[in-house]
Length: 157
Image (cartoon, rainbow, N blue to C red):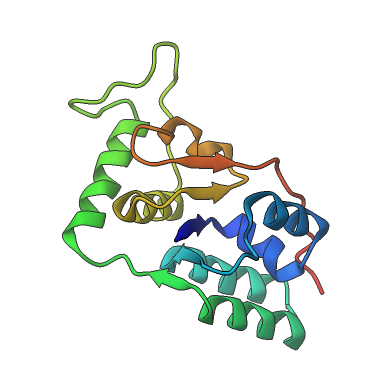
């Protein structure tokens, strides 16, 4: 079964049913049967915050609820995900005791939600689909990161 872990920015495009989403869905087979989609509890919280800050209307809120109910939301409980969070944070800051950043790569502080998203996808070994280049330095170190071209969203309704 094909699996993808969706970052918040991809979920926003999905909710909007934007042209970017249609392109992404077609390119990665995201509307195929037999596909399992995952996201992080952190992403679901980010979506709720975005919906409140941008005063989404009922139609958009209902679509968000429908989408989240039809995918697996990974909670941030358990020692394994917490351990990966710490590993990824130390690595991205260039302070991991065993994993060094590639030569010439500067340390980079990932946002706390991005750390939870990466740790969750890494723990379950599910490719992370994102428009966020911040995850790029984690690719093939902790998880598979599939970066799609950045999308511009209009979060109002």
